[in-house]
Amino acid sequence: MFNRGKTSLPYLFLGPSLLVMLVLGLVPTVAAINLALKNRVLRYPDSDYVWLRNIERLMSDRRFLNAIEVSAIWEVVTVLGAVALGILIAIYLFENVHGKWRQAMCVLLITPVLLPRVSAAFIWKFMYSPLTGILGWLLGLVGIHDTAFLSDPVLALYAVAAVDIWQWGLFFAAIVLKLLETLPPEPLEAARLDHARTWQVYAYIALPMLKAPLISLVFIKMVESLRSFDLIYVMTKGGPGVATETLDMYAYAQGIGLSGKVSYASTMAVLMMVATTLIFTLIWKRVSQWED
Image (cartoon, rainbow, N blue to C red):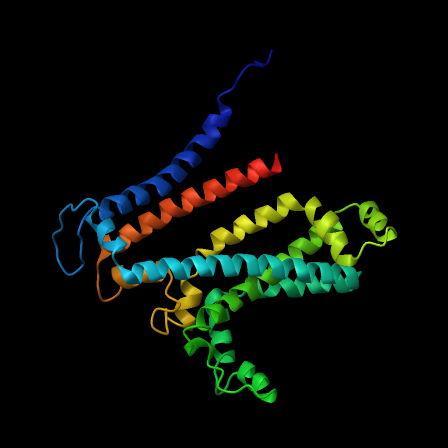
C-alpha cells in the first residue's frame, strides 16, 4: 500500500533551489549594508565603521535630494504614461482592427520592447538631434525650430521618458488588447444598446472587469522603471547638469566614477531598497483592501 500521508518530496525538490535563491539574495544585501556602515573609498586601502554617518551626509546632500526628485518624477511619468498609452492603443485597435490585421499589429507592438535598451537609446538620441534628427526636421516644417530636447533642463527628462513610454506602452497595448478579447461580449453589447458612448463602455464596464491584470501591469512597470540607468546614461548621462540624474545614476557617479566613494554609493542603494520595499508594500496593501 502507498503511504497517503505527508511526503517530504516537495522539500527535497524545492529546498536546494530556495536555498540558492536565498543565498544569492541575502549575501549581496548583507554585504551592501555592511559597506554602507563604513567609510570605504577606492583610493584608500583601509576603512572604518562610521555607522549612520553616511545617512546624515546624504540628508544634507542637495544632489542626492535632486536625484530623489528626478527618480520620483521619472517613476510617475513612465508608469502612468506607459499604462495609459497601452490602454488607449488597445481600445482603438479593439474597436477598429479585426482578424489577421489585429494579429499583425500585435507583432508590431511588441517589437520595440524587444530592442536592447542601449540600441533604442542611440536611435532616439539621433532622432532628437536638433541638426540631423527627424523630429527636429518634422517640427521645423510647422515652424518650430531649435528643438534641442536633450539639452533643455526642463524637457530632457520627459524626452527620455518618452522613449521608455514608447517601448513599454506599445508592449502593454498588445497585452491589454489580448485581455479585451477575453471579455464576454454581452455586457459590452448591452451597454451599446443602451446608447452608451464608446468611452463609457470601456471606462465603466470593460476596464473594471480587467482591474486585476491592469494593476499587475502597473506593478510590473513600477519595478521596471527603477531600471532606468542604461537608457538615461546613453541619452543624457544625467545632464544637462543634473536634470536627468536619477538615484541609481548618482550612486554610480559616486561609487564607480571618479569619486570612488563606494560606501556612500552603497548607502544610497540600501536606502533605495528599503524605501521601494516599504512603498510597494503599502501600495499593495491599499490595493488589496480596495479590491476587497
